[in-house]
Image 1 (cartoon, rainbow, N blue to C red):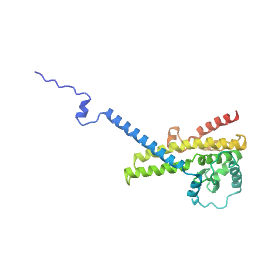
Image 2: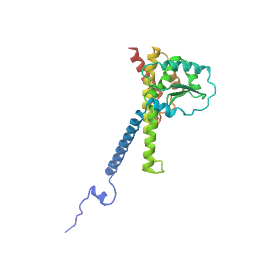
Image 3: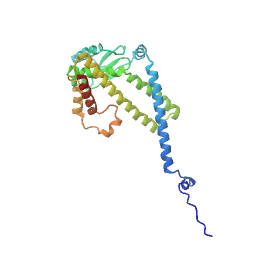
Image 4: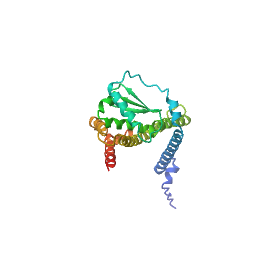
Length: 257
């Protein structure tokens, strides 16, 4: 009698100690989904905690925050302060002790620091000669304060740092840490879009028009266009300038109706 071995099919790999490729894919999907859920849960916890911080507490926590020495601000800064103070009269701003500060760096930049501070650079003052363009940029930074973007970022970073330390000990978490960093850049891009929207609407409500609001981003677009490929935008903390310009133009058309 001739013996005919039975075909084991997919079970052959399992019996040989090799994991089938379908099982590998399944395990990877489970790990990715699990990590995503944990990330979302920790992020939600961090943001919930931050939104419970009052304006008074935020101001007290960061009132002693140190900033780099900048020397005497130029005359252009006085104009920026005038625009900034006018924006503070706009509707619905959080009651923070807002303050505008100057940095003598040549790169055009502005950023919001916790507690109500907005920093502007010499490069920004040079690049925004149009009053309403400057108003939009400053309104954008006030939008970060309005939506607590800086505080939320600090909160998420603290929670994730604690979680990574508990899970990986002294290690930086390797690929997990890098994945969290990329996800946080996604948060940053969304925050920039929110701040754009808030700053545009605030500036429009104060100045009554949208003339010159795109000047700054058009300047940046013309100067740096083509330096970053679209497929790399996921790795950046800001949306592509072209995308931001398109959104602002659509918002401009909406507000003119």
